[in-house]
Image (spheres, helix red, strand yellow):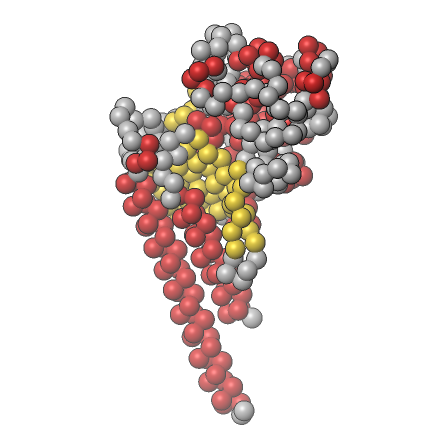
Length: 341
């Protein structure tokens, strides 16, 4: 093959890759439009998609942004608060027994329950899934958790447990000397410049940890960015990279999709490599989604409507659409690398 032929072949190949790159960019645009259409169909108040700190999509039902309850997605922020205790050396280990903070658990089977068990839903504490039956009527959700019987041996079963998560509010208070809401504000919200928030409290004044925090979507994106950057905020570690990796990793041998109060879903890149989408999820389709390798963040919020059909507002398509978006971006990156080479 002579030099002229090689040059022509190279130009053809370059044009092909450039055309493929443009097609991939078009796919990104189409997917973002599809997310917005679905967001509107599902009556969303806010949907943000951000990459590398730059907005790809910013859907707002109204121009005035107000805090909206995160429902159970709040649990994943509580997990970050535990990471903050560790970096402050106010908590020595996730494997410290809860009876270190609540001596009434020193005897019996509850003596085996650790902070890690509360974080990965393996405490074994008896729990009613409907929070309206036990937790919301309770005047003291921490005492409710402490008094609960065991339905499983600690570590033996992974069962979603609102009651156990609420006990983390007590652990944070006793470890830090501050009520959990005040700890969150001082240690996370202030450095992140989050100034508008609202917590839910029981009659005893304990903030709930299972749900109840209201934040603006633009501030929720900051928390997603903190996770995407493995605990760094403006170059300073609010939690350690090691903790974020542990928080997002498989937290027990029973369920692959369960981290430390974060959910996980694997997906394949076009080259066959496995990636993970990590997400916080709450009632009515409240979402925080993160793909750290791409610095890709998705947030969806919905204010509780007065009348609604759950299937019409939960936006269950958001997660698969975010995965598809991540796959297209990964494909585009591969093409760019080929063109650059």
